[in-house]
Amino acid sequence: MMGASRSVGIGQVLAELRQEFPDISPSKIRFLEAEGLIQPQRAESGYRRFAVTDIERLRFILTAQRDEYLPLRVIKERLDAMDSGTATGSAESVIASMTRSELLEATGADDELLTELEDYGLIRRARQYPAEALLVARSAVALREYGIQPRHLRAVKAAAEREVSLVEQVVAPLARRASREPALRTGRAVASLIAALHATLVEEGLNDAGLALAPPVAGTYPVTAREAHPGPGLRSASGR
Image 1 (tube, rainbow, N blue to C red):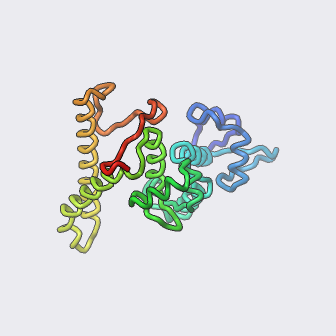
Image 2: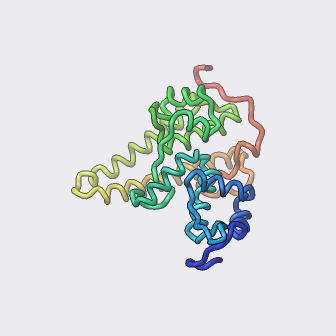
Image 3: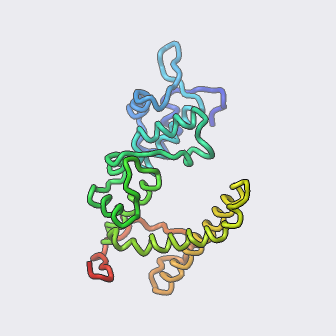
């Protein structure tokens, strides 16, 4: 691990990041620099020199691309907010907005799927979409591989709305106080407990149905759409 005051060349940066990001290359780093996302210093010889902060910035960019499929413009917005001090909490908490075309590109969804998600209230129709829309659309794309369509997810949304209503009832007395911080803390804590309980009950149901591949771990769903073949699809109660 390099010291905080040291700087290294591009070869050492590649060596440090390649195990976590196998597709990292000198051309990709140069491209990110040309797009203004990183600004490594230059030695007198003209070679790039990367400080610890430069490497961590690269790691943040690559993680956002790999795990969230975010466009570079959105990642740059997050970085700019962090640089200006307007971001609160961790880097992941920075709220970024996307246009419709950027959301489609980042998630692999098509316009028809996004329109259905909007029609069924899973994503709010807007000119700029928040980060939450990215997660919903990505989930919908993966679920579609199993034949699960947006109309089948109305029950999921209804359950979420009931859970939100329960949280609101709990925090209502706290919300009337001058400071909202106790209500926010309590709301987050209760919501987290309900979400964990929900996941555990689903896993228990799968286990009872003989669908558990391994002993269930509360709140985890490691299987992705690529790990199983999609089924024939579902039908709604109305037969649509």
